[in-house]
Length: 352
Image (cartoon, rainbow, N blue to C red; front, side):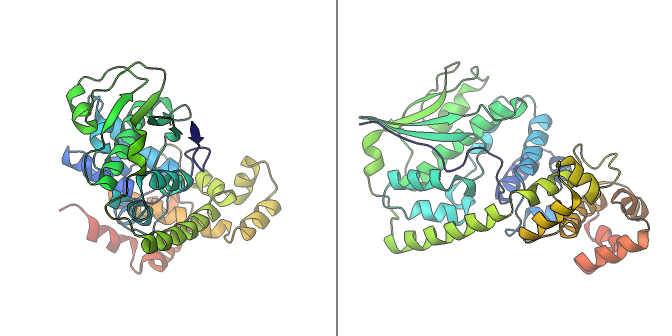
């Protein structure tokens, strides 16, 4: 009997944690790509990247991904190499819920329902068939310039996580990709345990259907129930930050990075860009539990950190770019955010 299960979300544009960004930045650093180069234009700083409580917009991670792909353009298996580094522990409580699931099938069912607790951009659809389980991975909505990287990364990460759940290599029966064969096929084969087929109609991986009913080594009913409750709460909190707050935050961030940034939009300009009145925007933000001022401070703080640590701009220039009329106003605000002046903050983080 065939059964199909779609993910609990419709696209990749959901808020997420920073663990995925930190993982990619660490990988890039091993290949000589600097933290500043990786975070450029994302609104993230090294400090925020290592704060487990920080939540970012999907476009911020996408910016980091583009920086990585552009910095290492000759690695046709870059996504596979990065995907191998995603382990079940990378996903926090989401990963623990999967580990404690009764069996692999229940873990897959949970992961699809709470996919917005992952870092996926390509959306998987699960197909249970008589003798085969197929994970069909959709990339149609993923930006074309990073599509191959994200398909490689997400498929490899999914396989790696399922391997961690089983405690042994996931015995794939077949893997297919829509894009051409990469130069280093051996790297992909080693990561997946099977030689993939390329230039196929779909991206997919498959295993014997019976594998999904086997108990997981660390299955625990009590832990599973506790993790499920925590995941539900986390999803509710994250989804509360989508909608109008996310729309405003996206319009306050510079589209092309901090170079040439002339300051964030005012509330009237943001409202106009959203095709609503300023009064309606204020009311909607209030209903979402935030305000234009709070979101502006959040964005200004992130951009200030980036400019102070990755550019030679003076404190006065940073203040002007952030839309402050005077440097003293910016210095006061920055000290309120961090407890120190911009100059002191920069000195502590200046390259040796």
